[in-house]
Amino acid sequence: MRTLLCLSFVSVIVCVSCSAQSENKDSTLDSFILVKGGTFQMGNLTDGPIHEVTVSDFYLDQTEVTQAQWRAVMGENPSDFKDCDECPVEQVSWYDVQMFITKINNQSGGVKYRLPTEAEWEYAARGGIHNKGYSYANAVRDDIEPVAWYSENAGEKTHPVKSKAPNALGLYDMTGNVWEWCSDWYEKYGAAPQTNPTGASSGTRRVFRGGSWYSDPIFCIVSFRFRDASSNRYNFLGFRLARDVAF
Image (tube, rainbow, N blue to C red; front, side):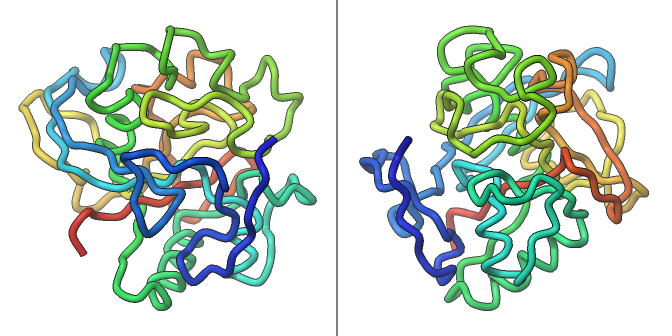
C-alpha cells in the first residue's frame, strides 16, 4: 500500500499519494486529474435515448472524498463504516456536500470546487478520450472485478480508496465502493446532441452514479443512472470533487 502524506486542507486534499506524478495531473493539486474534453455516446436504452454529448476539459479528483478529508473540513464523521480514514465518506446528503464545498471554496484561494455534472461523470468513468466502450470503469478489459468493490466481493462494507485498479484516466472507484452524487437534477434524456449539459433547471431528485459495495454488477455499469431526494443519506452514497480548468 502506498505511503500517504497527510496535509492540511488548505488545498482541499488531506491525504495525497506520494507516488510519481502523472503528466496529466493538475500541478497544484496532486490528486486531481485533467480530463481532456471530447464527444461520446451517453446513456442507455432503458433510461432515455443514447445521444451524443460533448464535454469541455475539466479536473476530477482521483478518488472519492474520504472520511479523513470530510472530518478535516466539517469536524465530524457521519459515516456508518467509521474507523477507516481512507475509506470514502458516506451518509452525506447532496445538501451536506454543498456545505462541504462551500467551506473548502472559502479557503481555496480562488479555486472553486464543485460536483461533476452527470455528463462529465460518465465521460470520465468511460475513460474520456481513451473510451473503449466497456461497461465498467476498467482500463484494459470489460471486467468489474479488478476495479470495483461491489456486492460479490465487498463483504457488505466500504473499502479504502485506491485499493482497486484505476480506469484509463487514473481515476479510482468510478465503479463501486460508494455511489457518487452529481450536480444535476434528474430528468429523462432527450435525443438531440448536447454540449456541456447540466441537467434540468429544477426537479425533485438528484442524480448519483457508479454503483457501490451494495450493488449488483448491473447497477455498476457506467451508463446506469440512479436518483434520490437531495436530503437523503445512505451508507452506500458519497461523492468526489471536480473543478473547471479556468479559474
